[in-house]
Length: 81
Image (cartoon, rainbow, N blue to C red; front, side, top):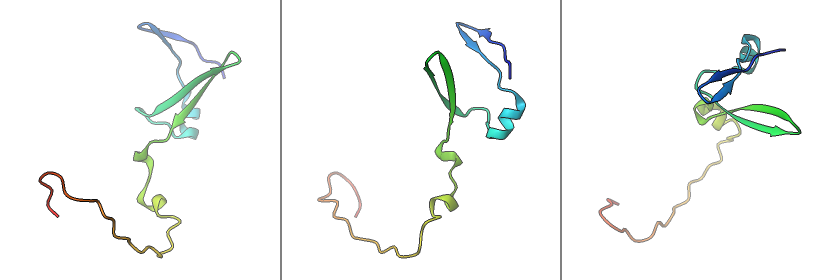
């Protein structure tokens, strides 16, 4: 797929075609990692924590959690214990 580089300020931009945006579920404001190797550019979208659901966080939970008491040491300041 062919795209054109366009000048924006002191930088160049390209437009990502709609069908690629849809397949990769890209959204405005998402971040990406851009790299260059062997005269090739790669752009990899970065998944942020805002895309993580509570369901996915607990998908491997089997119900065997037993909390342990943690000794945080003596209080220092005006904490309420």
